[in-house]
Image (spheres, rainbow, N blue to C red):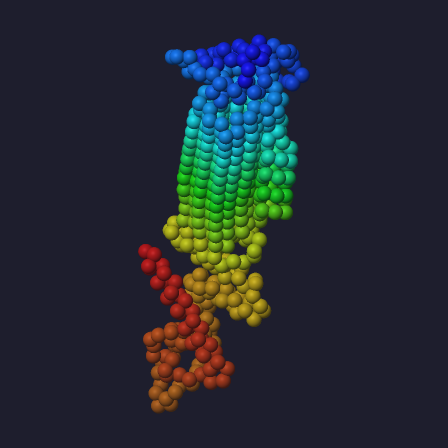
Length: 535
């Protein structure tokens, strides 16, 4: 670089660099390329490259730095594979072409309120902060494989690459916080697959626009602390967090995600150390899926709006969570799939139960509110797969654990009745008889009523038609009531049955009473035993 060829603004920058002083070229309105960019504000990119590559050393006792405000950078700023020790701080500058920082090693970079066609910084190493606050990129921003030891600040950044990658940050590593907030916007896909964040990932008040595709693609993302996609977060297109790990909590409070007819939020196999909040105005047009996710604390979906017409609005299939709050602001439009989920406490509301559920394999320790068996059976019968035995068994077990044995028996009785509807005619007939007689064994004291009725019937019949005496030489006293009771008793004797032998149709009546007494008596005994064991 020939110093004699420098223009006046370039010479100012050249002389300020060794002392780290800021050169302000009057950035009154740097946003537009058609602004007042006279020669007094133009800087050739080759001058910046020369300074950053070590053309000028720092003055004794000073720290060299390139600090420039309000300039238009012409030509190509190419620092690919360069080793740069001086900080780079540009504010209110406009670039004619993409800067190239791929595989460079730099101390810190500040590009604030700048306008660039794009930025290629794949593999970049920054020993400090990368500060892009308020800048506008009219093409892609490439940070794939980059490593930033400090903060990545993209607050208020505007990215525009419709149909392409607005932010390509695959395998990005940031040791501190990442800020994509305060009006951050992207037209195109924001990619963070395999990225690692040592602090918090803050995507508050962001607007991501990539209709029909992925607005945010962050599978296998690893964040050591919290993730905030709230405070007015809006995504048109899918948000994909499959296999991501969050060391704190994940917040989608008040977020709005729209991808109609497709997946809106995919958090399958997600692992969160504390809580997940999809609540307080969270709205999803499309499927929300936490299938296979592991949430150590609470998954909160209260006051949310879930819409996926003719599809699955919410999938919690195989989810593991300490607590799930499923109390949306309105009835979900679509199926809610809870199959094979394992939940400690399930909090829901009968007023917002979805019209279509999938519950087979669902495991839970407690329900809040527990509600009555009649109310909860309406919940079970919304299962789109029809009769499945496991949901009934699980609900009955929960009622028993809560000491609500009567509700538990009601659920098991309903299970038997609902199963009967799916059986063939012969089994339906047998089942109907079991139901009428003893309530499938879950209404044992109904058998006592039948015993009473049979006892009255037998007493009347045998009072009118005394059976013949077995031994003509013996004349015992006959009592129709005791004789009938002796027939009905499955064990023991009252001395009546052995003395008499009814004939013809009365023999069939006696046999019927013996068989009925055996079956009904055992049912009553079993019910009494269960009642005593509960006491």
